[in-house]
Amino acid sequence: MLLRTEKPIPSSEITPQEVYESFTMTRRRMLSGLGAVGAAAAAAGLPQLALGETPLKFATSNYTVNDRATTPESKAKSYNNFYEFGEQKDDPARNAHKLKTSPWSVQIEGLVKTPQTLDLGKLMALRPIEQRVYRFRCVEAWSMVIPWDGFPLAELIKFVNPLSSAKFVQFISLADRKTEDLPSGISWPYSEGLRMDEAMNPLTLLTFGSYGQTLANQQGAPVRVIIPWKYGFKSAKSIVKIRFVDKMPPTTWNDLNPGEYGFYSNVNPTVDHPRWSQAHERLLNSSGNSLFVKSVPTLPFNGYANEVASMYAGMDLKRNY
Amino acid sequence: MPTRAIPYLKAVLHLLCLLPMLYLAQQYRNGALANLADPTNYLTHFTGDWALWLLLVDLAITPVRRLNPSLAWLIRLRRMLGLWAFFYATLHLAIYVLLFSGYDLPTAWAGLQAGHLGEPWNQLKLIWPRMLDDVEKRPFIQVGLFAWVLLFALAATSPQRVLRAMGGKNWQRLHRTIYLAGIAAVVHYWWLVKAGVRTPWKVTAVLAVLLLARVVYAAMKRSQKTRTAASTAI
Ligand code: HEM
Image: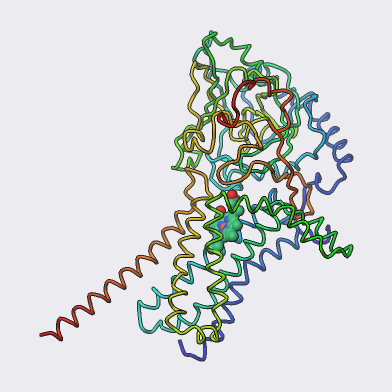
């Protein structure tokens, strides 16, 4: 295969996985010092330099998929749905450099004891960051396996103290005509939401990084959520507002086409999308030399049924898709 | 265009139509295809796009030729462009069957190499229900298949021999369905994109202009006829 390769390929794709991992672990350990400096600077309110992806300091976690290989970083960062930056999957990687991630703050509003605006540095420093390797299932019937760096959203929710009347959490993404395309077929800003128990579930991750580095812009930098048992579009990117509400909030894809995208959008192999089957997925995790993409059966709740199924006990998941 | 030049022009056009295919082959050889996150998706979209674009170029020949009598020679390029559109549509279909549908190509290939000639067929039987499900349930697949079947019928009846055997009138009637194939392909595209996505609007605009040109031409001809009829009546 090397003979056929003219383009440089990432080290992750030519180095045996073990060697690669031990290499990145040492690299990460070497760089974690730097990450600490950055966090300290942020916590002290000092201006941070926006240099694209920078290493993060993180602890490992038990929430780690170990029955599938991790998707090579270059693939996870070149194949993205982020309609603010274009409708094709390679558009975000091309266009998202225009996204300005610093300064950044997240407004906490709605039914909450102390509405406040949290500076990104402060938000990141709120709890220790851990790395979780999650399955990621797109509604378009492809999937990846991605290490995400962040802490449970529940920690932030506890920190900001919602009122007991708050039943849902809404996430609002950046909508900025100056830097984003914002295709005209969709009403912006992008909005997503979770029921309060879903938002509090330990799996729901407030995410600042992937592969041990801050998020690439095309992945929804600088802060997003990752909800691994739901289709990818539920995991809102580049979040600027988190709003606590008493009614089910409007969500972008559900508004556009309620017959195709439900509010819940839990990964469910028994409920087809009208245009494709959800029973299988193309598992995009091959490291390099094969054209062939494996098709694997899709698991209920994307393999997280043990952790989340109880939240939906008694609900008809065929109707509440 | 002197008649002598047409074979050369055709040779050049054949090469041009082959270029997308050569580009894919080159991307395969240098590893760029395998380095893509989702080669299956890329190949499906690449071949679908080229099938549609060539079909539109093909459909443009008649309206463009009618602009000026000196462009009459264009008609001689129509058949080859149609066949190239069919070529990419068939590649598109083959990629759907062999990659998109979940077909286990490596197992089929390993079977072949081990001398089990029935293995590709066994693998096809395994995913057959999935494809059938697609054809039964999904309108975008149905119109795509309809467009391909039309293109297939036109390709199969394209040789001169068949034209003579069928008779010019019948042949022409059948071959007018190429417009239907164009419409079906564009509908296929609209039905497969998500709500709110407008990427197919450019091909739709081109198709609309080409269809409109036909309508305008037919109307002009009709009014010309009535005018001549009226003047002879006087
Ligand atoms: C049996 C016949 C066909 C099947 C099964 C089929 C299947 C598909 C599939 C699965 C996709 C991708 C959908 C997705 O990504 O969600 C697609 C896209 C497409 N197909 Fe077909 N197709 C067929 C015939 C045709 C024909 C005859 C044409 C054109 C002449 C065509 C043009 C396209 C185009 C333009 C796209 C979209 C490309 C893009 O997004 O860039 N297809 N088709």
